[in-house]
Length: 283
Image (cartoon, rainbow, N blue to C red; front, side, top):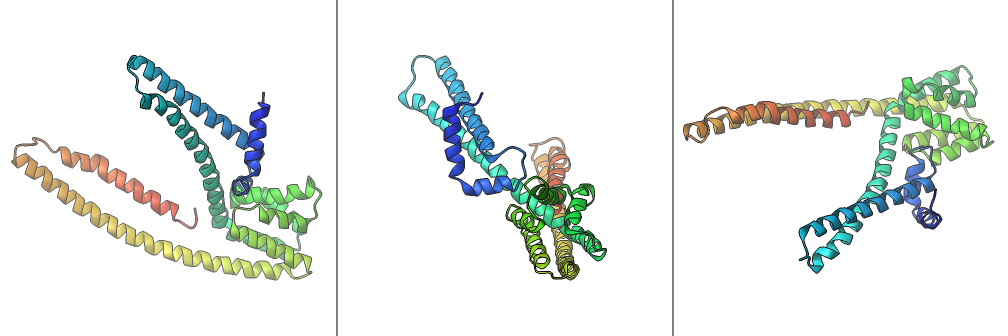
């Protein structure tokens, strides 16, 4: 059951943070932002009481000689834990919004190519977005979700297509998708050629993608050269240290060499691969 005083407090808290509300709406969660703030408050309060309970039990088990600072540190630690939980939730929303925007940008040029094909076949604008909403496995689930949101505004809220595009662009995490929807709304509303607009947009994004891939290829080559050089130097350095320690009698085996081979090199490889994957324009 929802606690009414807490719900009223979280409703006031939700109404005061428009930036977080905007980020949350762009994540396309099913639950409302007010409910999310309420759950966040519950988690923060739970963290406060858990830390206080744990600290109190620790102080009781420590004996009767408990100083004032130790007593004050328990509720202080609880407030710190509650703050960490709250701001971690807020940061996760911001990160999810940015991640969704990146995924949309990565696959948008291909989706526009599909829309251009439909425009050349005189497919109605509403049907374009409806078809795109069913092709998440081809162009990405996030693009499909954005297209489905446009259709939901038309079917569930009774908006016309132009009004739906204008509202959908204001709640999109991708700047490129926003520009696309604004352009489509302007061209379609003024009676211009949607085919010509999509063709220009497609060629512009294709060129941007080409330049991004060239930059990524150059960075991968540079990073690979640096990484291989560092691995080679590090391996030689570790072997020399292992040899010196063996000669000094401080070590009787190849522990450092095995540590380098089984821990340092795999961990370094994982980090480099992760960085390259994250910076890949196609991901």
